Length: 551
Image (tube, rainbow, N blue to C red; front, side, top):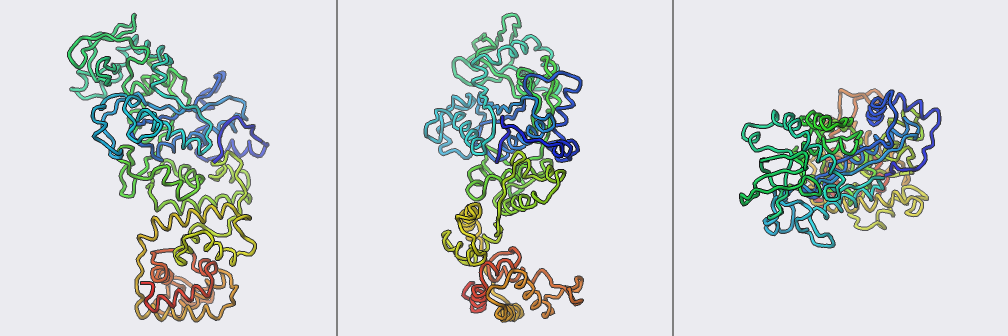
């Protein structure tokens, strides 16, 4: 995936005109920022921000924010003809207290003594070079962003608090404490209102983040007074990393302190958006432009959670598919809830290459609506992909191939001159297909025996394939299969019409083929599969099924 950095954009009048009228969502969001400064001078830098809570292992939904925000940033650069500097800040709330122990850490009991301590103090349960849980998860975030080659600046809340970068806004929170409380208290239950404070002191004795009421807030001296866990009255400065802000005030205060212009977040933050905005404005800032996206769900329709570890991880997706397919999944329908689990990967891969193949044929209006334009910062690569990922998966399934050489034997016979050297992108997909099949398709394969009608249909199909020349293409094979199905009452669809005027063919014919021959419920176009696998090999597969050797 390309990035939005300092590279010069090659803008033509056609691109600029198409951008002005583009209905692609990144352009629509970028226009909000244009309107934000309508009639005003541009600031030194337009600041895009994404937030990350490193309370658990990062999941793909977290990083979707970065991919999507980068797309809006690129659209903004186009609309301003790259005349306004921009920056993407990825802010990690690693000073947050560990309120519960994640389910997916190696030894949960080892972390129990560190409950409610800042994440940058909690020991790293995964071992390695990172000293704390927060540092480890921050590193995972950065590794992913670097793998995508994003142009970003990482920010650690712990570093910002301790270095004094937030001191000015923390003093302002103390000065406008009553204003902040007036915003927050109506949003809280009666019991919570009695003890609430936007300041969370860090106990100088236990090191824990404390949720305690304030006995005094001294704006002049920028201090707070409270009772520590042992009951001793304690006074701390609000500066220098001795306190942090509750998460809702933290949102608004950070926006005011840094001058954030754009931030997107998930639907679960939607009800609090007005609170964030009001706090930002109470502190003298201007709330950023927002984009609220729908949440990612696991295969059971449950919200993906960092602490539960449900759904896909970054490494899991990238083990079985190229990064561009993940970027496509992030681009498509961001305001629609989508399931994020292993079954979505093959379709995302093939859709990415379909969009890529369509791009050169499109005019600029269509191109700026094509996901690959946004994924690659306006410079999609040219890729020749003679075989789809779905076909590769079925080829692995039918051939039981476990190494690239076997698959390339089929591919090279099917497409003359196509080799791993001439088509490195296809070679990359071959490796992904083998891994995906071995881990997810093979364990769930269930071959079923054909009934008598199906045996008759398969025998007829094999006989018809035997009449075709060895080099018959996918279209010829598909037509031959259709001819066989039209002659069998069971597979005639009288609601459809064939090219010759007779009944069409029911989809159950091809479903039967894949269930019996491949052990799967569905597959790609049969003609394309048989052409790639080879007519003789396909007939041999049918023979095995009829003899019960597959089941």
